[in-house]
Length: 75
Image (cartoon, rainbow, N blue to C red; front, side):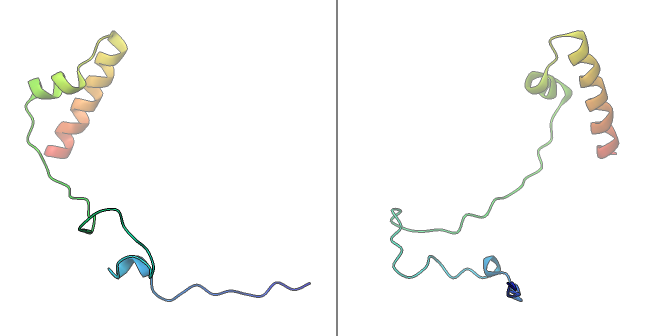
């Protein structure tokens, strides 16, 4: 009972934008490649607190730790 050894393809099919497989009908009228984008946003401390504001003492300590890390990354 030997298992046959299957090798992987040398290239990754996701590297090529070949579209959907034959016979596939997409519900979208015009298909577009979905590529995520990343943008850096400048944020003031007030904005940071409005998004990630602390509500308890433990949260405030975590917030201060996060702010320290944020400062290190910035600078």
